[in-house]
Image (cartoon, rainbow, N blue to C red; front, side, top):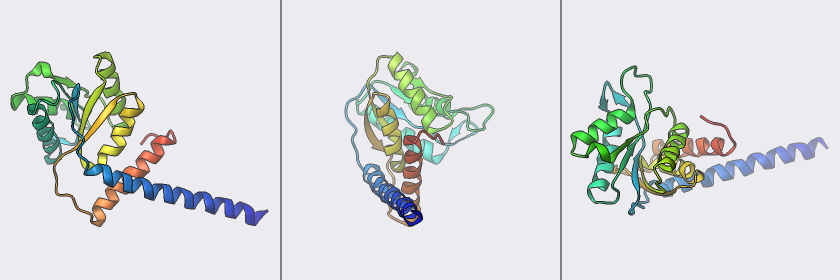
Length: 195
């Protein structure tokens, strides 16, 4: 009996590791896939801001979203991200201000500025889109982040086209670590655990 329980536990552990490995490879595939297509809105996932200025990562995401907007793929942009510990600025508002300073009309920009995680931001984005009658979006973020955020938005009934910001794609240990971390985050989310 004891040996059977140990075998069962080992089998479950191996199955989870194989699934996590497969998920990591799927995240890697999605990270370089450009799916941008005409949509209702471009959703730009937040990243760090420094006293009202976008970090290099956030700026790159905003520039990529701006490029898609200028190509006419959507008539609206939705910036996301809460305060992240900043008592004055939010990632979403910093993103909005940056886009306006680059010629995007204020009425074309929607704002989600309360999310403190990917889970919270995607829930808020889905609600904003639902209330506005929007069903399709181009999701802009770093490549490693697209898969998880895309699945969370799709879970809420949206049609999502991933569009990773332009960066040199590497396959070094740091990149695989990012893919694995996203796989673990996605696995926990599917189990109902929010991180």
